[in-house]
Length: 135
Image: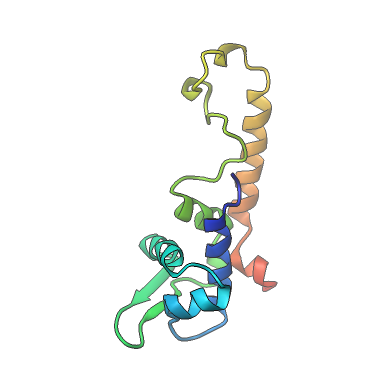
């Protein structure tokens, strides 16, 4: 699941928004990215609800970054648009939450859990500024 279309579109939108000083509307962003306006609107609203974007109403309204790119992590973006932290595997975050009745004999869960932790740390450290090539 790691990078879904919603995460991809969120990142692409944030890249475009980082390159402008004025708010950009959903319509212009959806045209530039060649994606559904309604799908993009949901993504942008989720980003605004989670203080990654600021939304402005009115004729000159739209969306603008709420923070500098160096303060926006990939983990924050992906968690926001997915509604939960991105997971590489459909494995539970703890053995107690495992949907299988075989959790007590699962030999790969410790490995998957450790790998997920490393990926989470990487995504938390990777920022929009890194994607943009800024320092």
